[in-house]
Picture 1 (tube, rainbow over the protein chains, first blue to last red):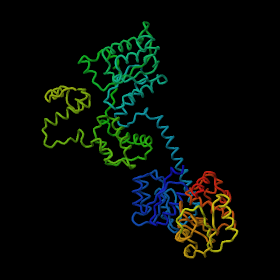
Picture 2: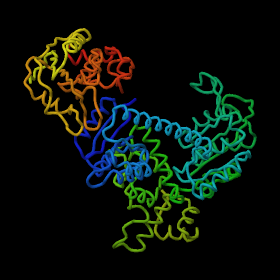
Picture 3: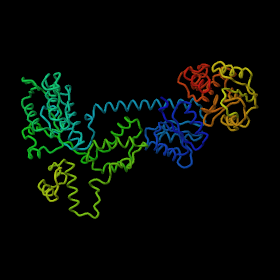
Picture 4: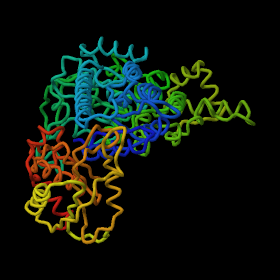
Length: 450
Length: 172
């Protein structure tokens, strides 16, 4: 257990550094030394230390300044001041500035043991307190959705308002915005919370498989149906069914779905008698269903059925103020999962993350932080750690030198359309132009939906 | 100093060290570890390590001096001294050894002429020469004793984990 505690001895006298280093090693702690305050800060930037033993008088940065800098940048590290007899006033000042304890040189080995026991006891209490706070946070925060921006506050209010109704909900939002988390939150706050929440990605299931998965089948209903199986409509039994990417459902399945939603009954494959089902439907899509209706690829009657209440999850670029909170959350998660101590992001890196467009939204941010943590060799992530995102080369910063206004317009409109999945309404809203103008621009620039 | 790793321990008295102390320490090593050992001819008190401000003797300087001496047939040396030892940050130490080093030091000064205490310090410091850390087993001789009271509570032997490490490192 002591091996997990790391100690940094900071003293300009080699003999003192060595004496303490060897004592800590014999006690089974991980130990390192630094000959000056500046060197200590370099060590702290590279590696995490739990406790620092700092000599008060050192050339260059003195112990007091090091205490201040440590408290400011590495508040989890405890600092013990080592001082000579006669400089107790300075030691007291250091305590006021946040040092945990002080030792007067020379001291008995037993005193050092006592100081270590005291600090480790305090750290254990801090750890327990943090854990309990985390548990409390899990209970009180909005079902794993992270964000404090006004956009998210409005979304939370909406979720609370609609959770207890039984009306079908359609969640709109770009890819990676967390539509499934919103669906889970609605389920968790509804009267159906003790029944299952079943998510189904309609885009990943072929039509035939989706039919058998949703409706179930009897034994011998088709080749390979060796045993009867209940479908999700039955299994969900009073819970919530979440159909993600509902825009991907085939037209034949749309008819079947519509019938179930209207009658609340299903007929299993191979059966003739209908079975009653009870569930709440939440659907989600990143595609423009209204456009699909116009194109004749999505049934309008089904759209009205599933779209009694619409929720829109804002893209990350519209709630950029949540990025620091999300980065912090993902750093904690991936530092813990990868067992690496990476817990900080430089101001430059955070500035770059805030200015990036995040076309993949929270999922892209999560992947970016995970990748940066995995590849990081220091506890602090710099802007270079996120170099793979091509920061500074996204929408707002495209190099415009030597290019015509028409070229820039074409590229910008194409990017926005791509981001919105060719949702004309949302693209027009982002560009702050009317839908008609957008249509005119699409035509003028010869843009085509992929 | 002989560089070969012979499984032998030399016991080196410095200054006025009584025969019963030497016998007790030698007997403990022969009994507890079963290693070949040799009592080396005694040397004078380590005046070169005296610190007139602290009125104590610098343990690190004594260890360095012995390490530089040519002592044949001993892979490791356990020096017994009758003076009070210190390392710079500590007020005093009962003994001193660097982990993985060749020379350990035992001070008899604060042990109130009790040979079993010297035996415990010697075994403890020898454990450090064999790369051992302090042991959490309260009775093991590798448990860190904060004072004489705690020193008296530890046994004059290693726990089985520490003993196996000592045997391995001592080539037994």
